[in-house]
Image (cartoon, rainbow, N blue to C red):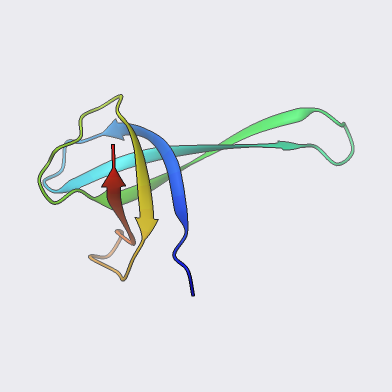
Length: 76
């Protein structure tokens, strides 16, 4: 099964080897026919602490690394 890849912005890098990435998705509301923006935060594994707040990154689904981390950063 292919792993999901998402693109988002780093909103926190305060933890060691972890970044919090905010991923935004846009969709058309079924009743109002208006474009709606929703965002969700994912905690991703950053092995070398390479990414800082504001960076745009791509994250990939992976096996659980900790209690909250199920994603890893693959590119900047």
